[in-house]
Amino acid sequence: MRFLLIILQACITISLTATTQLSWSDTPTLVSAKTVNQLQFYPEQSAPAKVVALNQSQIPAEINARLIHMPVNVGDLVKQGELLAKLDCQQTQFNQQSQQAKYAQLQSLLAFNQRELKRSEKLARQKNIGEAEFDRNKTNVADIQAQLQAQQATLAIAKLNTQYCQITAPFSGLVTKKMADVGEMLAIGTPVVELLQTNQLEVSAKIALTDELTFKQAKSYTLKANGKKYPLQLRSFLPFIENSTRSREARLVFTSESIITGTTGRLLWQSPIPHLPAHLLQKRNGHYGIFIIHDNKAQFIAAEQAQEGRPIPLSIATDQLVIIDGRHGLVEGQTIKLINAKEQNNNVASQFN
Image (tube, rainbow, N blue to C red):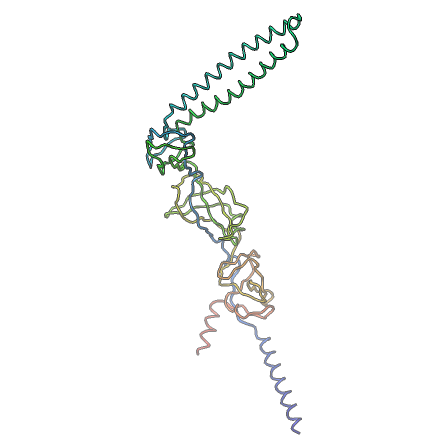
């Protein structure tokens, strides 16, 4: 008898549970929704950026000499080819004159030996000199020609060193440092001034890997610095990842007005990919996505590129209804009923009456 009562009680419990579940499944969940067209937007994204010069060089002495004159000071703007410093060139000039004299001497010697070769060639045809004498004259001419070529290179170096007595600007720019003083003895390679190029500026920006796709697809770029915006054009997107920041560097150039080197700001670009508000993001079975209404049921649409707390990149039909209120706790295929905002407010109020 007791056994029969236990079985009867179990059957009643199962029946009640099934009835409750059936009642829940048959009761649609109330939700509100908006069309994708009402919700989607194209977010503005940004990355840290800095204005950099193409060249910031320490201009060195290229010969061993004493610095005798420096007409520029820190803060001076100079043009390409303008004099930055002058070195004592007496020894270099004397060396050039000496090498020039040796070159002229070899030219005269070569001319003499060439005449000797012509005479010996004529005498050899007349059998008046031996073959050994004729060969010796030919060898002399060849030797002097080789010496002349070597001396010509030595003279060119001497002339070049004389030119190095004047240190000139390799590009137009701003003198940022004086690194030597008048009267100092400079060795080859000793920096004299530091020069910052001012007529070719670029913007360097670090683009996070998560923003790489939208950055490459963007149609325009802008630098925002000191409350002002400057249009840019992408020059290069470097094909390597910096390990420390897990980002890629982009280099951009100004298309019109530029600003001074060292200015920091934000690089702005607008994503060409439509996004949905971040608060709509849901997670089901390990995947991020949103819920839409399909045949009065909830349908989960995965957003593979979505990240928690950030706008949701997703391209779907603009007439789809995206569930707004009531999305929490929804499951795929759950029956729902769409209500408008007024109906929802009434339902909420009725719960307190």
